[in-house]
Every structure is written in structure tokens, then in C-alpha cells.
Length: 319
Ligand SMILES: [Fe+2]
Image 1: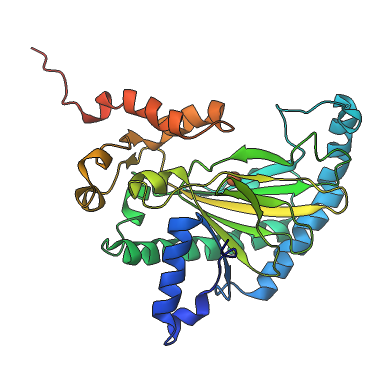
Image 2: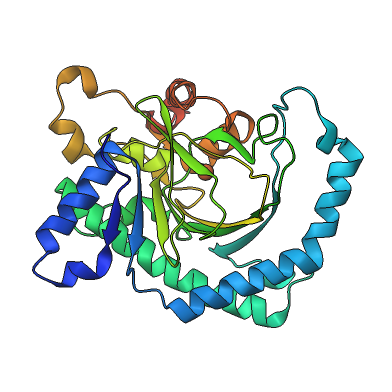
């Protein structure tokens, strides 16, 4: 099997550009995941984000997690647990409106650094969408446009820690799922591994690498590209040693954005592939996803198809 795609983004500015674009294309078509090095986000900023995130976990989250584990008796389970994950998380919303000032327990410096980090990630996500457009033969800005809705994209960061787990075979760090949104940028721990994706029916490790950003495709990009790029199942295996930090930033459509396959891509498809994906309002998809995250995506797409008529139909005539 080919090895997990690691792509040096700085080489886009060199004569290596065609080869790098090809690597991105291959990763999007065949992996749904890739890892970026030399992506333009400063190493100093990433180091500060990591230190502050780990400090915050120690100071404010660790004790709470231990109490939850004790209250639920999770360290002594004997059978597989399928309804929760061995993770400690909180969510920072950046766009359209930031919630960072409302999250309790964060130090001001941490809030400021996370805002700066989010701005860098937003730029990177938008640059990546344009690179994807180029590879797909879509005009520049095409993928960004459907993400806008009336208030711009939804963009947020799930800050997670996966503490050492005594029974990783019985409790997953995070159960297998595909991501609902658009494009996801992950800053993961460089020492404690655990993220795996499903490729050709086998779980493959996403290698921890210092200062890299792991990118993956969400369900919305699968719909817009008419399945040319697919969201891929992934999971986190908790480790018996070491605490794993994971900062997953989701660049998603605006809540009222209407999502549908790009006509330019549908046109090129054979007839049987022209109607594979539904048209829907993003927040309707998210309502469905909330209850079905850990199930296969195909029934979600089918369910959205059955809800399609309100989006497509003309207003009902009234007298
Ligand atoms: Fe995910």
C-alpha cells in the first residue's frame, strides 16, 4: 500500500508545483486525508498553542475527567463501551461569531493565542479550497462560495485531550465517524499517536509529526465534488501511556448555506452518477448528523434526498 501522503506546501512556490498539486489531487482522491508540512503557520505560534493547551488541560480539565471516569466506573469496564468516548473536550467557535470570551477558565493569553491561531488556520483552509478548485477544474473561489451562506462560513476548533486509558480495546478515544463539515485542519500531538483512518478496509495510522497540520475532507466536500473527493472514516485509539492533544478545526458551510454537487462536475459524470448526492441546507444536515455521527454517511445522504423537495420546489401558489 502507498504510504500516508505527507505534502510540503512551501514547494508550491517552486518548480515542484506541478508535482505538489498532483500529490494533493492523489491524496484527495485516494485517501481523504493528508499531512501538511511547511504550511506557513509559524512554529513559534504552534509551540505556544500546544503549551497553553496542555497547561489548560492540567489545570482545568484533568481533574474533571478523572471524576467523570470514577463516577461512571470506566476504568474497570469489562465489556466494550459503545456510547461514549475517552476524551476531554471543549469547543471554540471562531466564525461567524466568536465564543472565545465566553468559555470559562481560559486565561486571557490563551484566548488571544487561539484567536490568532484560528485566523492562520482560516487562511490555510481557504487557500486549500482554492488548490482543490484548481485540481477539480473549478474556477477559483468556487468551493468557498457555497460555504458562505448569509453570514459567512462556520469555523470552530474542538480542543481535545485523550488521557491515558487502561482499557483502549474496550473504550475508543473517539469512535469511528466521518466529519460532517467541509475541510478539517488538525494540529495533533507529535508524540502520542492514536488517529487512524480506514483505507481499503484497513485501519492506517496518521503519523504524528512535529508542527504538521493534518487535513481531511468532510461530508460537504464529498457532496459538492459529487463524490470525486470522499470523506473517510477515522477514529482515535486511546493509548495506555501519554496524553494525546488534538486541536481539530472545522471549516464548514454557513448554517443557511445550500449545498449541492457542482454542476460542472456532475455534467462530466455518466448518467448513473449524476444523481448520487442530495441538495440541502447545511443546518438540516447537521441536525441529522447530531444523532447519527457514529453511523455510516450513506443513509444520511439518502435521508437528505427525501427532504429535498422543500429546497427545490417553487413556492405553493396561493390566492
Ligand atoms: Fe473527525
